[in-house]
Each structure stands twice: as structure tokens, then as C-alpha cells.
Amino acid sequence: MLSRRLIPLFVAALLLGSAAAHAKTLKIATVAPEGSAWMREMRAVATEIDRRTAGRVRLKFYPGGVMGNDKTVLRKMRAGQLQGGAFTSGSLAGVYPDLELYGIPLLFRSRDEVDYVRSRMDAGMIDGLQKVGLSAMAINDQSFAYLMSQKPAREVADLEGAKVWIQEGDSMSLTGFGLAGVSPVQLSLADVYTALQTGLVDTIAAPLQGAIALQWHTKVRYVTDVPLSYLTGALVIEGRAFDALTSEDQRVVREAVREAAGRLDAETLRGEAGARKALESEGIQFVSPTTPEEVERWHDMARSTVETLRKEGIYSEAVIDEIERLLAEYRSGAGRP
Image 1 (cartoon, rainbow, N blue to C red):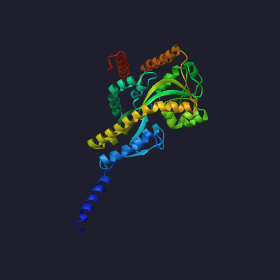
Image 2: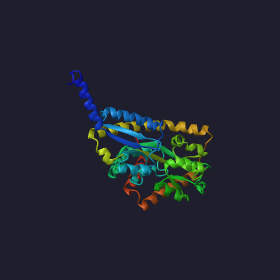
Image 3: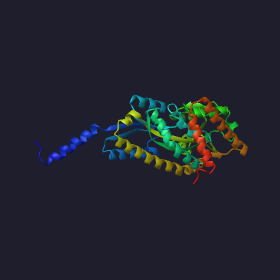
Image 4: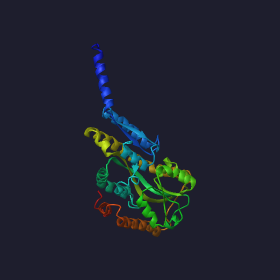
């Protein structure tokens, strides 16, 4: 028989063993490399969730694209081999196109406009993802994308003959560049660096910090100094896997990830200026449209993109209308403090 002194230890061991047996492990894939700010935050999130759920929920990350491209990750999530992934809005466009509408070219003129629209529309975007079986923990800011190229692109006409990369399945960019007379090359994020090395592509649209983190900046010489589009991403968990958690554990996971996303968004804002300086120090030149009329040509292309997207019926007209209404409201002064 066990001594009285050993009984508490025995009971504790049984409880720990029971908790481990019933722990839910959420396997999450990302292209973010180990050591990046995103992975540092997510490692901290995993520790916090493990503590706050007493080991009932554990997050296991697969960084650096080791689980394949985004399409492969989504397939593995549906098959139950993975439970989650970190995606760009473009990567999720195949299952929920409307999330990509924040990225309409030249839609936003300032971050204040972004904040105004997102504060009123993010909840609806999260609901939309839920309806297609994906529980979004957070929608995060991936900054504005800039056109980065091996030849200067000061005018829309300079894109003629360019080998432009777009994310595979990105219908919006495909339409926009098509209106500029460009036939883009569609590739996954994981394939871009090699494509730049081999010359398969010579022009990309990417956030400045992202281009540095993925080393894409080493293969370009110019940045067109016009914010081309605003990018978002989302950490999503397959709906059935998330529903298998208790409501309290779901709350803990959402809270922890959203708090981390807020910290990452703040870091993104701080890092933009530093990324610009870093690129300039490496000899990359920032070029601007030659005239105000040329700036207007870029905006004309954006307006044409919106109208074409409406006709194609890929995106919800109601969501497009709401974004345009909110922007008009903000620009009129009605939405400003």
C-alpha cells in the first residue's frame, strides 16, 4: 500500500496524466521563418495558452513553409493533418474572396482610413470565414505593399513587358495588372525567391519589411514609392478543430492570439520607417510617378479594377459598397473625431 505521504503525489501524477491524455494539440503551419517577430510572438502565445488552459490546449508550429504552400496547408487542414495556418488574404481568396477586398489597389490613402474601415468591417469578415469552416483568431496588419522591380516603374506604361509575380489564386491582382496590359506569373509565396533568382519574375508587390524578411529585396533595385495595396493576413483554425475546444478554452485562444496580433501590428507600424532606411542603405532606389497626371492614371486603373471585379461577380457587391460608403463617410469628415 502507498504511504500517506505518497498518496498526494500519486493523485497529482494521475491528474497530470489525465490532462495530458485529453490535451488538444493544434498544429499550425506558416511561411514565417523561425526567429521572425511573428514566430517569437506565437511561441509566447503557445506558452500562455498552455498555462491558462492548464495544458488542455497546446499549439505546435511548423514555420518556414515546411508543410508546403498555402494551398497544401489548407488541404491538410481539411484532412485533419493540420488544424491551422497563418495566411495572407490572397491565400484565402479561394475559399472566402471578400477578405481580399481590403487589398483593392490604391483603395486606402492613409492608415487612418484603414483603421476607420477595419474597425467597422473586421467582425463581418471573421463571420464570413466562419461560414466557410474557418475560425479566424485575428486579422492582422501586413502593411502596404509597394511595387519592387529590377527596372524603375514610374509610370503605368513602364510595366509593359515586366514579369510580375502575384500570389496564386489572387484574382484581384490578376484583374488589376491585366488592365495595365500585364500578364502576371502566379506563384506561391514559397516560390518567389527562386523565381527572382532564375528570372522567372522581375517585379513583385510586397511590404517593405516582408521583402527584407524573405530576402526578396536582394533581387530588386527599385521601389515605386506609391502604396499599391493594403495587405492583411489571418491566423485561422479549422472550424471542427476549434469547436472541439471548450467555450472557455476557445476564449483563451482567441484572446491570446488577438493580443499578440495587436503587438505585431504595432511593431509593423514602427518597422516601416526602418525598413525604408535599410533598403536605401543597400542601394535600392525609391522612384515616384513623374507627374500628378501619372498618379491619376494609377488611380484610374484602380477604379477600373473595382468596376471589373463587380462585373465578374467574384466578390460581394454589398461588401464593396460598404467599404466605399465608409471611405466616402470618412473623407467627407463625418467619420472623423
